[in-house]
Image (cartoon, rainbow over all chains, first blue to last red; front, side, top):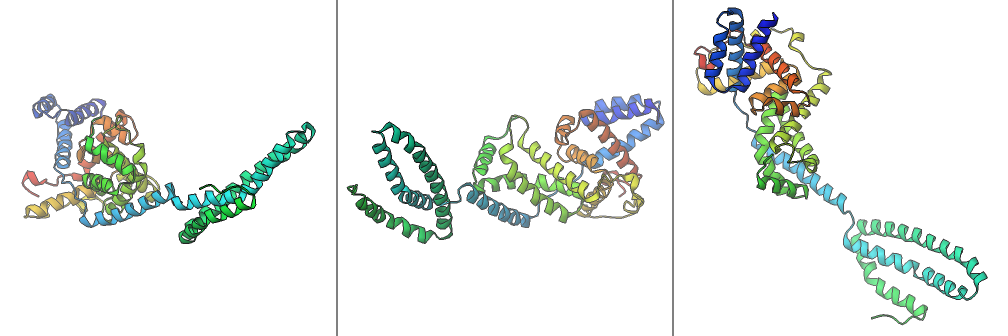
Length: 183
Length: 194
């Protein structure tokens, strides 16, 4: 195909895409009057354009909706579960359990700190141990929280029962430490 | 870009996990997505599967939609054509060119095939167009589909197919020339003989 013919055909094609006015397209075709081969090619391309322009649109089958929405529903439920996998009750139970388990250790560390504060030498010796105890406490709390969350997720009824018993357990610990129970 | 405020509300609600909002999006765009899938994939069964996957993908990427960059319809069609293009590329290893096809298109486009009923003519036209589209390389096919079924301009097609405007022009021109070869002398419905 010669360069001129290719250029002419490109112009024809661009006109099909950008010139909705058929008069403007006719003017362009008039320029091809002296080039019968190019005109014939332009006619063939214009037929394709007409055919594609009149092509029918498809309609999605009705049955597709139920299939797609069932999958969408399952994905949305998974997403919700992933966003917040642990119920509120489980978090409350886990926090309470972690506090109850670490309370004696924290009380002991506080008592040691208060008594060591009067003696600078003893304070220097005790301080790193207290820090170590606190680090240990953090580790323990994280682990207890993890376990409690998993327990509560697997068995929410048992977790609720544990949660209900916690105030009594804390009162018993407080009584053991001679701390007056708070109402 | 100016999307309908209701549509933007559906989008944000769907992102927040509202299934009813996503359903509204589905019913608004299902025919567009299905048409693009049908024209890209070539059969109703493949189009149904692809439509399903496109909407699942749409749900996952919905938070990334930026209404200041493109209309939602253009964005949905971009996802659709890219998905089908990837599918075709993976399935066939590379673009299928009509030059690689041995079977002459005249076998599927016989001009002496009578079809008196209007409805039948519509179906036949659809099938014939599809037979010709199937012979185009996947990317050229995507451009023809966006141009003729969704009335996209060169810029929109370039954006949807992640290519340049000049590449769109030359591919679209080449595709039309190939389709003209394939169409041959077969008469179209509005040309009398069909």
